[in-house]
Length: 225
Image 1: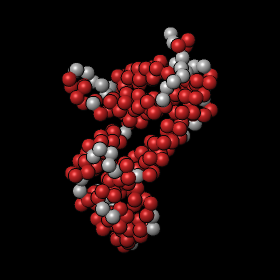
Image 2 (image 1 turned 90 degrees about the vertical axis):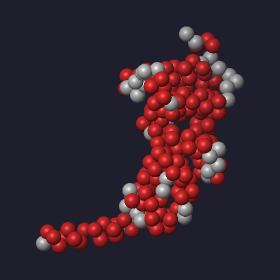
Image 3 (image 1 turned 180 degrees about the vertical axis):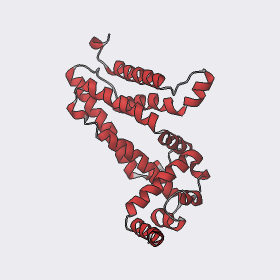
Image 4 (image 1 turned 60 degrees about the vertical axis):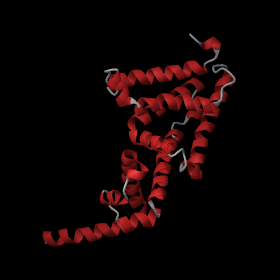
């Protein structure tokens, strides 16, 4: 009886997979994220992605047509993940300084915990942003974060705690740059200066420094210490 039930399991599993296309697509995208982030667009292979997923090579092509389309969907999924998490911060109900601090800390921690995202962005920069330029979804998602910052900044100016004349896009650049460097140059910086940058205590210090630098940049003169 046991042997019969064991043999019946794989077909049942396959049927469940066929009836759950979103799960199959998510599995493909998760593996593709690792492959593209480690090997780049040119180095990643559909054969290898198929071997590491629950899908066949034929199924990958069915869902994504070709490798470049899969790469673009991988980028979209990575940006969608971070932007959806930002939306859950619920910054509108926080005071401006607290809202900005929460956003900065989130960005720093997200990047630190998702090095694949950083590597994907670096790879897309090698391609001069060619694939991102093709994605209306990514354009929309990233416009959203500027809208969020614009709202937080405007409330801060109105409350008198933020100085006037700042561009929210430049503020986003500053937050991204400080958080991005922490991951993109972690290994070289650590080796050059013989400093274990990834150690939890050092990451905590850097998170505090980055948050403090951004808040000092936006604060009105009278609130500077």
